[in-house]
Length: 76
Image: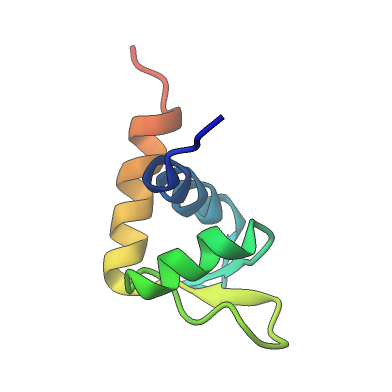
């Protein structure tokens, strides 16, 4: 099965928001390839390293909030 990396990245970015703590930090507990693509897109800090969390960029946090609603929000 061929997977759509863009849709996976959208879901990972949205789900990262669920682990938000300390303002803009999120636990980095997702697929490393997806995390790296989000970093390359400028949406999160570099996931490589000893830190257990990544930082959202302002654009990344805004996009994550919108995607969380679109992908997982309930409507009326």
